[in-house]
Amino acid sequence: MKKIKTYFSRLSDFSQTKEWLLEEMTECEITELRVNEAKRMVGSEFYFCKAILEHGERNGNYSCGKLCSLYNPRNGKSGCCKHRSFCYESGKEYLLTINGKLLPIFTF
Image 1 (tube, rainbow, N blue to C red):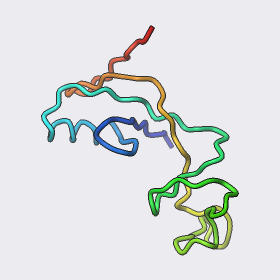
Image 2: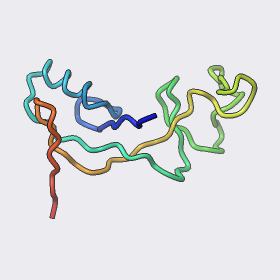
Image 3: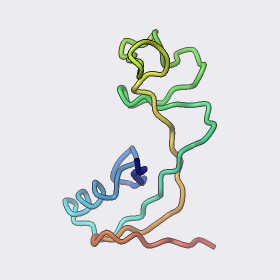
């Protein structure tokens, strides 16, 4: 399964696909937009809950698990919740044009 790339921008609080960003750019009549590639944080002490759209701390006071009313194990029995996801950080910066091209922005 191919990983879908997502990007951070000023149009959303969450990372979004290029297609979503292009639709928003068209709707808002924006021709160019600075975006940052969303890069998965490996070994992070945090997780993201897709059900409530909040970050949490692994092994914190309130961690994902049976204490949560939305807990739904991936295997149907126990273990990791299907709503638990990774956290992402900003990676490379690009200029997204309305025709869908991603142009790298070089900083010196």
